Picture 1 (tube, helix red, strand yellow):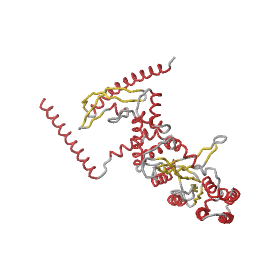
Picture 2: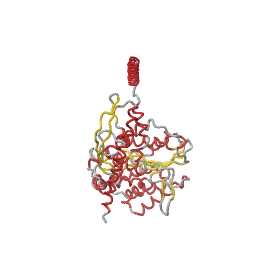
Picture 3: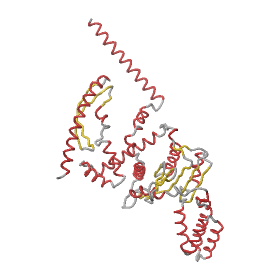
Picture 4: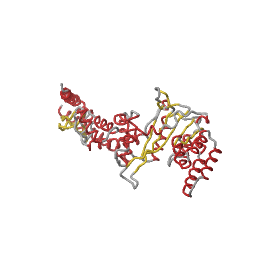
Length: 438
């Protein structure tokens, strides 16, 4: 038995059912559209590719005051000049967050028996870019339910960059600014933990990612002056303690604890102390662990006496300056009355982005890198479908239809008044003809 033959027959049945639905809905809308004042002007054929295959269907087109309307197309969620259904484009976009564009072409053909091209996948990603732009615009008008905001005594924030290869710029590299917010870590298995109430922001622009971070904190979390904000970073450019102090100050919280990420700190110690032997390196680890600044100075003084040239001395002094100036942030959580659970999660959160966007010789445009990284984050949050089909789209269309200025509003008012006057004049003529008939 070749199962593909059965699937092919099922697809034919699906198309027959689709044609039946289109015909029934087209006939159902005919009297409704006439009652609304629309006149049927044409009945033409349109070809669209759906998840169940490519179909060509005929439907009526109506016209009123120079405006065309195709009820069947609206029911199917199709706009002008679109050859692929929104559901298919969504699924193409979702697949592109997992595999390369060319692999998506193969997967669509294998799963649905539908042929698409590499350009179709690119168009699906471009559509997602447009949806992101509209969603970002809509967030300024969106109302948020205060009662649904997440309440927690402690909120954790971490930030770091993910470097990807890009086609633009001298360095051919772009840093994706990635921030993660959560309310703690919960054990869900033997060696598995899950971050609670997690939110993420990512962008090729650090300022934009930081603005989205603040937007998420203000709208999704219930933060008071007594909320404890715990932050963690590698102290790289754009992720210094000052960056997180700015966020805490903006939120108006009094309690803020910042950590120099232990993984990156230990990595830095290992690299800088390597020329001075493992014994001195282990002693420095120990001094940092017990937060003894005096011991750290003694160890670094010993290392200085072992420097053989000026270059090694300058490098050690640079490390000493950074370590001692930021020593307060190396204080372990236990000594602060906190727990390390939920701190230092950034590397694991990067993986979903780096697995798809790094290695394998991939280069991205800056706009493409921004869109793909946001798609990956949104898909992991199980919110990518809402971007394509959520209620926010209908609300956004209403907002776009509003006048952008007083002059636009007055123009619309003039048109409405003129239409009412013309309708009244037309009605009077009909009454006059009726009276003359009697």
